[in-house]
Length: 197
Image 1 (cartoon, one colour):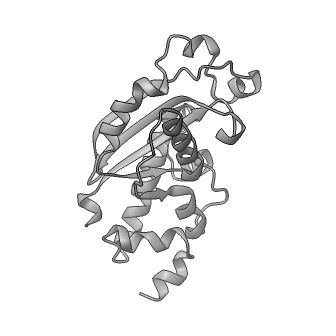
Image 2: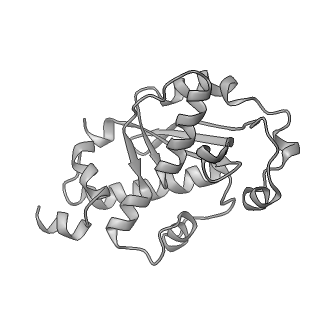
């Protein structure tokens, strides 16, 4: 399928810890669905993690226990998320982090996380060799993308989305038109792939 025809669901999660294996939970999620570079739907919600958040975590994303106290649980948001992600390719920066949390949350709701295709903008950034640092805020700054609100789910989602389409614009000039053609650029140095075209 042509990249221009694919629905991409760019997403980000904010969490109570660094790993679901250590009891970390999602406390905010945002999704922006786009097709052909045009946003077709956006969704963002705080999530009640069902546990208190450590002050060190609150200091990173600014989401307080009071803010999530009346928020829906992940299970309550699950039907909306499934509807949003249906038929999409997931895009995220450091996607493994978000996907692992989503898998854990789905499992706790008695469901298996569907095997969505995933594109990781962190992997693309690393293999492109274009940036001094590959974290989201630094890439955004280098590209002139406003990093305001960094470490909140929708702000991070929109930054990753703009970075993703920046990459697609570059790679389209080198004949990348399909998801299958894009995939290797997450795992091999771009200059090696482009020189072999």
